[in-house]
Image (cartoon, rainbow, N blue to C red):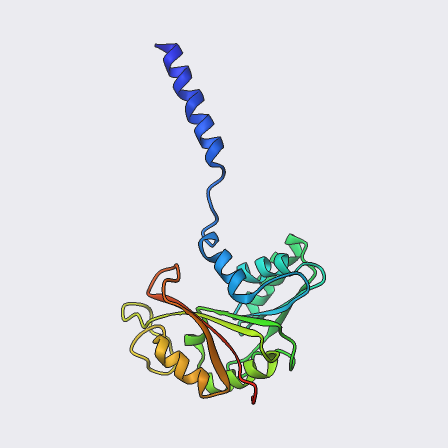
Length: 208
């Protein structure tokens, strides 16, 4: 009996070791974001609305020492937390930027790619933000927007356009972006995450 129990325990440990550590909750979409942004060493990338800095850190590791990341946020306290996180992680290729509701704070032409992950629907002045994004983005470079169809049971956001819930319809996003000098490169309707998430990849039109 004891021998059988020992064998079962050994098999259980071996199985756990073969599976390896549990996946990070962001890993399910990390590979897709890397591909959508076209990340490689040496690129300059902005994470607009960086939040807790998860994606700024990941992108910083992807672009390496020869690349650079601009992590923007309108919340000064969040930026201080991100600064501390990046320092602890030993990343020296990330610059945090305090933006506003009308301006990302990004320098003109600074970016080879820009990520907006669950951020666009928070803009209280999306028209001005689109101008700022277009100014920061190099021609032909991708602007990756991940968002969700409006969710009526999610927290209501103050000061943002009324879009029928927390989020923005994909068609409304495309209409707003294409009216302001962007064109659609790719759409992904099966994006992982809660709500009804999607991803649209844009780039600046030649004349903008």
